[in-house]
Image (cartoon, rainbow, N blue to C red):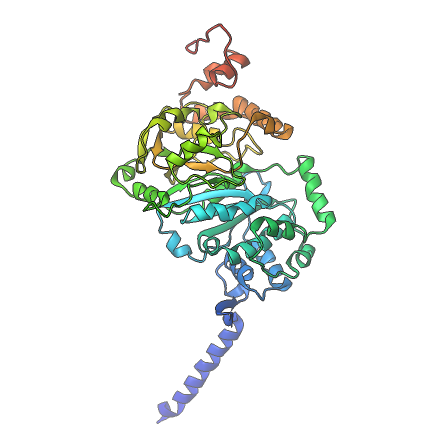
Amino acid sequence: MRMRKSFPLLILFIINILFFLAVIFEAPSTSARNGEIFVIVSSRTLSGAQTLGSVVVDNADAGNTSLVEMFKNTLLYGKLDQSGTYLTLSNVIVALDNENVLKEPLCVAIQSSFDQLHKLPDFVSTWPGPVSLAVFAPGDEFLLAISYAKYLRACFPAIKAQVNWHFAFPIDYQANENSIGQVWRDMALNCSLNQNETLVRVLERLSPEAREDISAKRKNHELPYPQNLMRNLARQHCLSEWVMCPDIDMVFPRPDPLVQPPLTDRLKAFLQSQSAAESANSVFVFPLYEVKHENFTLPSSKSELLAYKRRNWAQVYHVKVFSPNQGCSKLATWEKRPEENVQVAYKIEFKMWCEPIYVAKRGIPLFDERYVGYGMTRNTQAYETALAGYNFYLLDGIFLNHVWGLQSRSMQGKARKKETSMNHKFFASVHARELAARYDSDKFNVLSIQKQGKRNYNVAMETVKPRNKQINLNT
């Protein structure tokens, strides 16, 4: 009898406890707008600030208060780089289809500054798999990048489905919380505008003083672009078995509706084949070409690419800037081969200064983050990969288009040449010796060539033409 009387009281007590817990933890609520569900949530209900970032960016009702909360919470999850110079933020905005894209065999890691993000839609239009994107956004450009991400995710469904966003900026040059109102005001999304027009409009949200401040710092070389930090930040969040690290303007051939399956599907099939699975110490290199992009349709097949090249609409990447860049791939030989399915064309003999764009299993050496700016950033990683015992193979049946137009040495500015010179000095005096000690090998005679003098070293590295006297590399 006592049990029957106390039972309703027990139920009432449990209900009160549950209600109390619900109030404390602020369970998320949802509201519908135009058939889409928006999650209105406080940071205490989230597993991390990265989820809050996706919610705020995708929520049409999100205002300044939401962005301030996201901004503060995101910084709590920041991590300093090895030098203590940069703060990195991981998974600030996550792909909508993240669980499925992570099951793909290949993840592509790319990096970009804010002013180059307009190239992301073109990149994603040629690659249907997971993308890990690291954005360098110093100062208020972090807020601009978040604002622009809102537009990109709303107007390009593939970006929302496939791309995970990470950010980095100097720890001493963070965004100003007071600028949030300027950047986020009247954030009406207009998908009828293309990505270039929208980028300009987003940039105009900053005050003239803020824009001048960022511009002055760049002009005074106070904001060098930390390429290798950004590459590592993107790559370390690629969880697929295979990973590759092109630049944001190096795109796959556009899908040809008359060709089934698309080249990217054939690439994934190759990576899932038994021969690729058994190639633990192999990296597979993409032929890389510069292509005219103004008023041109990108080539979708090898035959189209070679037709472009005959008309001087395409050329080997950096062939007129720094020929050793793709020299070891011997693309003149590749061009003569018949058009094949995606498979290995031939083994590459790696040479110092070669900068191949390749796909490899996760676990290959990272990029050395001490290189900041341009020069020696990618070839030193390839050099260490070769020292670590990896073999390089050129792929047939697929290639990459660099869509920044045809490059020449005259297009390289003084600042870029200065950064390259500084990075080369660091390599010659420090990094090359470290690698030789780490792997107990000077496999490519880098140190022994250096001892013969600067000109002999440059000749051996194919950066200048030899004089009549033959260089003896065996001394």
